[in-house]
Image 1 (cartoon, rainbow, N blue to C red):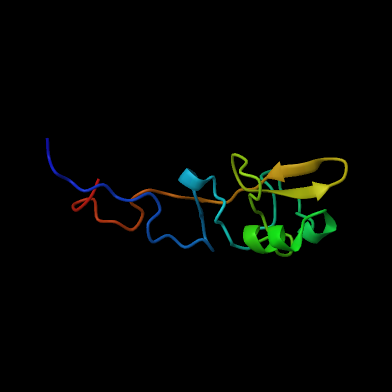
Image 2: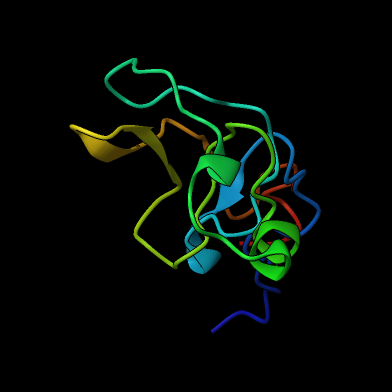
Length: 103
């Protein structure tokens, strides 16, 4: 047994560039606005969200978000398809850490 400190999942990450897996990317606030299949996202204010929802979940413009705790960030694409997941990078545990000092 070694007393090696654990890296904290996503400690020091930038929510503008990635979403943390342990929070289902709910804190992601970047500007990616296309889905995994390449469809363009449509604006969140075209849907029935309150001002509190919009502020708390960062439902700005047409950016990918996860306001409901789904598996990944997503966005609405159109009325026929509804919504799709987005390709937002996951922040990784120990990203930016020295593996010599934590594991």
